[in-house]
Image 1: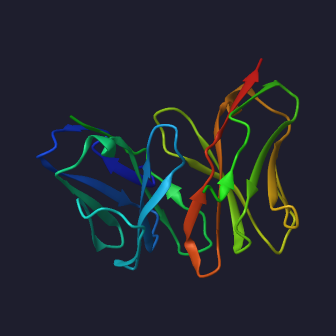
Image 2 (image 1 turned 90 degrees about the horizontal axis):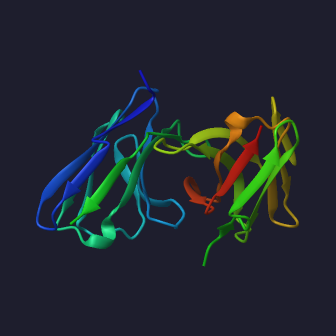
Length: 112
Length: 113
């Protein structure tokens, strides 16, 4: 069983669709993160959750809506996305600040 | 403005030799640094980290060096193996934002047999 699991691995959606990305961690961590990696750009932090509470929103548009029901699960709800939102979305978890973050394999999202 | 930069997009090294990957940062508040390795179609894998109270950290074939005055860190891989071929990212955080990693753009390492 891998440490951080993301589903789906690939997602194609239209601009008017609503979909959700799911992340689950089996490492006993208390912090979870969403990152975005666009083509030819560094990984960008989107959201940080500590003990289920959102502690950081890195100026992310409201069409991305995170949800963290417990310390093991993290969702990213998507609605009315734009073509420029096509990217690799990575989830990570850690024991807290100044600890290594462990990543899932990501969801490759394509917006038509 | 990128706060963490990896100025070499690619590096090619012969098997058995040393690989040296470099990373520069501009934010003087950064005090925790990490290196990740990424294979295609997989997420980044944590390799090694260092805090600013140290200038060197070693784990097997991997050593990270930190030069705070130059705001520079490097990853040494000795000896390099073909399985080390991947994209390597450095990342940094610090101050009151220990959770918030800032990543460099990555360096693709190719180790030739």
